[in-house]
Image 1 (cartoon, rainbow, N blue to C red):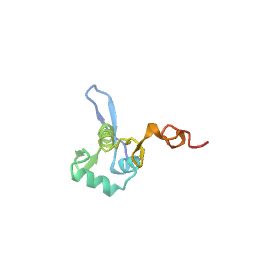
Image 2 (image 1 turned 60 degrees about the vertical axis):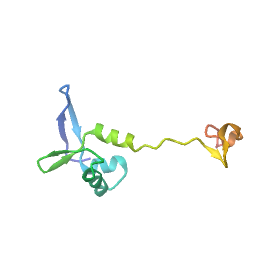
Image 3 (image 1 turned 90 degrees about the vertical axis):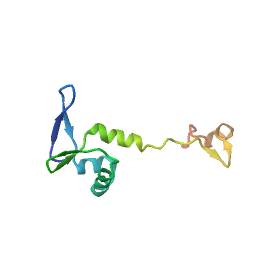
Image 4 (image 1 turned 30 degrees about the vertical axis):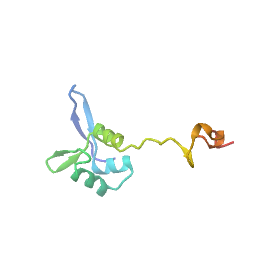
Length: 95
């Protein structure tokens, strides 16, 4: 992570702002993809002169909005509770 920029939160505490590169590294995408997210309004950003920065909380909320919940596992329509233990999600797959 490079150049540090800080802002003040509502309670007067300093908060480190993130760069495009920081966000890209955190979420595992390219800098170009982060720019696309901001231009499409998917990821909020702060524009300070020519600089674009991101609040860590905005990145966290972005990730939570895009989180997919695990679906209940079935095998060919058989509910998980009827499967043998080794096929269940909570089963021990490593023996």
